[in-house]
Image (cartoon, rainbow, N blue to C red):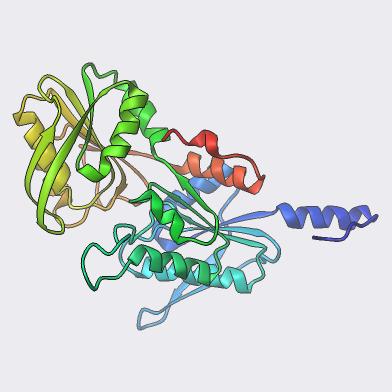
Length: 326
């Protein structure tokens, strides 16, 4: 705590120092960071990203951040350089005497590795959580973790936002009759149930069997599909195999239409081709991960305003619970 002073000039300087906010962006999410900064009401701070000839990353803040609240925005999708760059930005902010260093990860990579589901494997989500704190993060802000319990991997505060607060209004705007919310697997039933309750819709749960990661061998569904407009909800879409197989299966069983709502558009491998060739009417995603290419079937809804609002609330010690629908 600062000692009180009777000098109004010093008092105003101290107050300014305590309330200054600086937003900085990693190179992976530059466009989203600019939108967040604009929504917040200021420009991005100046930071340089340099690579040595062998690819090694070096970051440097080009303005003073001493005593300020620094929000570092970077999604950590592959390649691993994105995560390494974020860690270096956090470390640099800590060593530059920032008062608070908040790691803003619109997409938290390695979240799918949240447990030992087989012998002799790493728990990648826990490892990343430890690295973020060790690098200097005093707080983490992220969206739609693969599993809510990942928040328990951190010993620092975590603001876990839900994309449902922007997806639900969009789904409502479609005015779909005979609406049914579907979970693409058993693990997503909690998320689907929350959407269904809010929209007062029916619910369907898909059951899939895999022989290996990203490959679905067999899929069926529990619930009524015929004559329904289906909206599949999930936290991420990778190759699109599960969503496309679910959409095709549901259309074959008499669904009127099938849409999918997924927060993080990883879209690796043949994802774009799979989506184009599937019976999906539309895939709605956010911009937590920038799209590699455009597609007429993919609609992007920005999370910039939501993150800007929560950053403002956190900085002013206000409640952020009103931003949670789920």
